[in-house]
Amino acid sequence: MPEAHEPVPDHHALTADEQHLAKLGYKQDLARSWSGFSNFAISFSIISILAGCFTSFALGWNNGGPAAIAFGWPILSIFILIIGLTMSELVSAYPTSGGIYWWASKLGGPKAGFFTGWLNLIGLLAIAASVAYGCASFFDAFVGYFSDSWLKNYSLNRVFIEFVIILALAALVNIFSSHLLAVINNVSVWWHVIGSAVVVIILWFFLKDGASHASLHAVFGTTVNNTGFFSGHKGLGFILYILPLSGILTQYTITGYDASVHLSEETKDAAEGAARGIWQSILYSAIGGWILLITFLFAVQSVDGETKAGGSVFGIFGQALTPHVAGLVVFISTAGQFFCTCACMTSTSRMLFAFSRDRVVPGHQLWSKLNDKRVPVYGVIASAVVALLITLPALVKVDINGAPVPVAFFAVVSIGVIGLYLAFAIPIWLRWKHGDKFEVGSWNNGNKYKWMNIVAVVEIVIMSIVGLLPTANVGVPWMSGFSMKYVNYAIIVVPVALVLLWIYWEVSVKHWFTGPVRTVDEPPAEPAAV
Image (cartoon, rainbow, N blue to C red; front, side, top):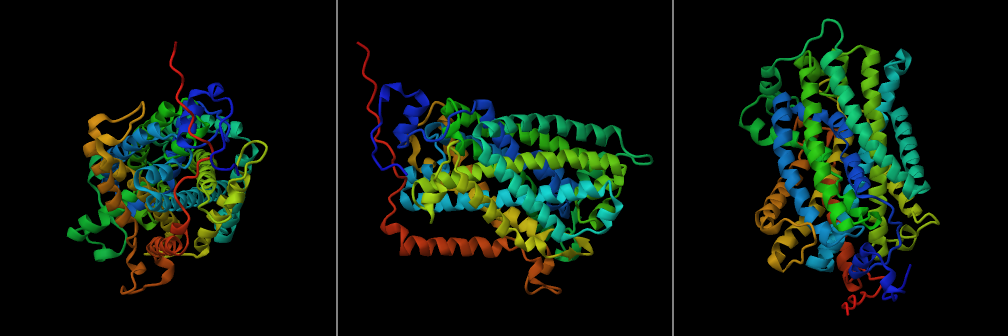
């Protein structure tokens, strides 16, 4: 670990990016080998409509049905784009790994930075875990389309073993080379674009014999309440409680775009490239994701049949496609989810590296250590291990209303969404408080920040509360049939984590932590031309 205030040798040999980074207090430790497109690509890969739209589709179906998905996705996407635009402005001003935590520290002091950093790290770990587990579930289903014995002998233990293997492979890819990661993420963009197009074409033009497309009314006018709340009825409680839960589908899918921030120290022309990487990845994913979801909804043959199947996309594929064609669709999604897992691991390990570089994480000397390829290898391994541990409840089998529902997966999804978005909200709010005193970068929102930042924070607070709510009536202690295995354990994990962090802050951190640790002196201004 470099000592604080290490002088910058040969300042005039630094590139513009390195000068900007030095002004923020860091020397160029990570390899700056990523292009602006690669920066966009990693956020686009983590958002991954081939992951979120497939794996969390049931959240939208069970909590509102087709109409909730068809209308809810574009509405929430607009709010998420506003969040992204406010973050683009921040990364342009402060393009550094772990930037969200750095922003909060710069704008609100050490305490704001401490809680922001931990929320961001917890969120990233949960997102990495959920994507890897979703990838394992889809891989298992893919094999099942080509093997009756595999399908009939479904095992949660087997899926978990596949999950562990996928985490290990993603970790190895991350450890091997930063350049290789950039190449993989570039390939991932085209896999997502072409793969999504292939899925759409299949579901529009290659349905099995006897299958047909749903009507406009069925897609935009059908509602579903498969939660057990309100006896399945659709009155005021459905509007105020059930429908908001469907928004987790959108909020979870379009997240992880902070990867553009965490990789900014490895991106050329980061003040522009990382800013564009955030908002462009959100915009293109929102458009592509809506097309994909609408296509799913038009392929539904029986609303009741899909509901009995737990609202998963597998129910739709089973209704509309032959097994082998369905297997092809699932394979396209599985590969996209693996790309997404690799990208999530990259983002998580870079955040852990940056937070550890500032000595906030126990064992920081290890997590901030780089190998000869300038990769935080131990940070990658730690990220994979923690992701595995928080997904252990997925080994418990859960059926709701007679249908298999991955409650543990949904809980990890909620933890990821809450952690990440609350971390985003803190610096967004602080930037608003700074007003015109905030020194903007080359990419900024002008005076529009005055309403955009407020809208962003309000949306985040509402959806974070929604993410803590039970997703099934049997997950509520005073309801008939209650069992702990049905509980959305985000309501336990998030408050407990916040309390532990508060204790850690009061007992220890506040006595020594003063914010990000500078590794270089701020370089002097360039001499004026003579």
